[in-house]
Image (cartoon, rainbow, N blue to C red; front, side):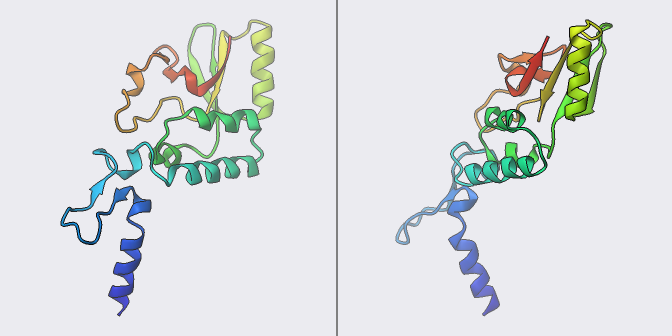
Length: 162
């Protein structure tokens, strides 16, 4: 009995797991939304609710809306949401031009802003992820038009301060 209930529960969630189920009379096999696997498909019905939950959790952790909004710029597939960190990074580019990455804090960003104004650093960036995740059909992060190799950053995903 338990295995029948489990099988019914699994069958009822296939559509939510990124697969299309054929009509009961169809002999066709279950087919995925895309060839990359359900978590990497665009248009996965799980994406929007997962993004909403992730953004709510970041707001609950007191991250400002301007940072939380960066998640809307990320790749639109479930894997991008699930693999994204639960915080933000402040990357500082020194004058030499080495880089250092720190966990974002409002105080750290204020110091970076002051140092940039005083020309003690070259630039700083704030981001959730530095490299765009490759959803099905997307180019690799370093083949996208916004990739900056010196910063190792897809700039569309970041707040840039120069």
